Structure formats: C-alpha cells, structure tokens
Length: 92
Image (cartoon, rainbow, N blue to C red; front, side, top):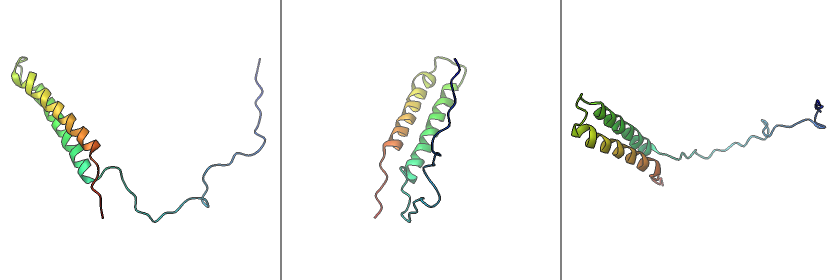
C-alpha cells in the first residue's frame, strides 16, 4: 500500500537566526597551542624518516630495517601522543 505524504501543521523554524546570534568579545581558546602543533609536525617527520629507513637498501635482513627503523617509527608515534596529550601553557 502506498503511504500518504502529509504536510506539517505549522511551519518549521530554524534554530538560529541573525537576530538571535550570540556576539562575544571573548578571545577564542584553542585546544592546542603552537608547541603542540610543533611537536605534531616533528612526530610526522620522525615517522616518515622511519619509513624511509625501512625502505633502505636491497638487503632485507639488515639491522636498520629490522630493528632501528621500527623503533624510530614507534618513537614518532609516541611523540605524536605526547603532542596530543600535552596541556597548553597557561597564559596570565
């Protein structure tokens, strides 16, 4: 059976309008500060360097590919976690 399409009884109002917009002069507080972003970029570079080390030479069983490169990648990920969880410095 086909369903009937009914119109709403009252017009639908949107939640925000120009007159009800809240204007605030308070400064915007971001979750991360410059130090967090700097650490995050450094961690991405360290992870990329670890993957470059893994690509390395044609020797599959080299110590660089098996031991050092994975540790560098894990260190980069750990630095990324530190960058995310580091609290921004309080400004007076």
